[in-house]
Length: 436
Image (cartoon, rainbow, N blue to C red; front, top):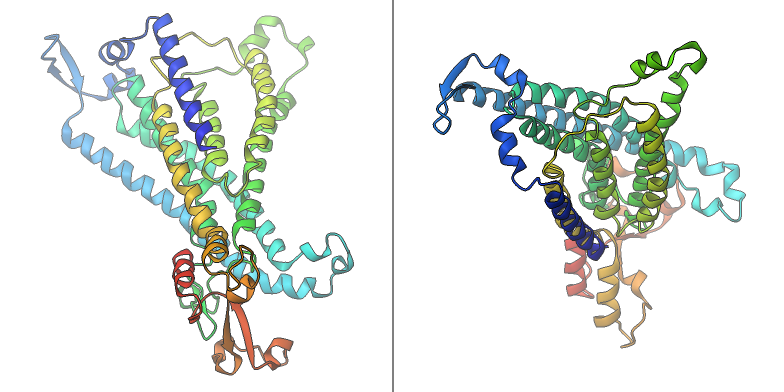
């Protein structure tokens, strides 16, 4: 996938350079900077100064006003990012609160008797799926708010040219969307289950009675995959519904209007007509590159979605919008740098997923270096990946409530997935501590 990302970006740069030359746009960016001032900039800038190059008077924004607006913009961005983090913490609290409820409900569930799917329907899976659905709903709600906030912040900064306006809006919208869509995936991939402690000394969430969230005994990789499937698929399906079905539902019978009235009622394409199309594709690009090690089918789902997306967009542009006015463009603007940055970040995230989220590295180290029988196999790996704990040493706050007497509590010792305190394979132990 890393090779594909590199080739994709390089071939796009070649195509962009070819189009730039064919349409005589090599020096267009400099011309636009000098000639196309935004009307909003000219109307809001009450002061003027002489341009040292053209010797003409032009409006300008004082440095003090520019700094104040930039500081307010940055503070607003941080505030909304903090809101996203607060929502993630709320979803984490939901996971911790409902896990016990699902465990008690599913204890005698009829699904337990199903031979094929029964063993896979567990409280962990139910908690993960419902939490991912809630997280997806929160993402969709916050998106509606972020679009308006990003436009308001950019307007407040009073960019000088249309190119500067588009680049600033692009960076803000992408930053909001990046944190909104990917923060929960980053949490599951790199933070969940890393700060839970161990029996007898568990870590608790903000000093409450809720223990920090643990991974499933099989690891967090399956939960990361579940999160990606729900968020990525849900976003693509909802986007196509918005573009196709909702607009079609608002359309009126053609017999009630004349042709010119129908054309007038079409939506205006606007200056940012393709902005949201770029944003949608870049977010999808992030899903199929940043976490492909966890969900290798993501590129296939993206391909199927894009096959439908091409036809939906063609129908939308030819029937739902007024004819757009042609405009010159030097390149895709800030989107190119964003794609390059995500390509570099994808190498890091996938390497970290393989090294720290999955158990691939400990398995390889065990198989090649620490197999007791000197054979390249995984015999004994499970036992050597477990630690032993004396149940009599369990603290009071972790003991079962009165009236409950689980079978494991009557045993003298128990095991848990960790390498805490095991002296058998010290190098393997250190490696797994790095993962945790």
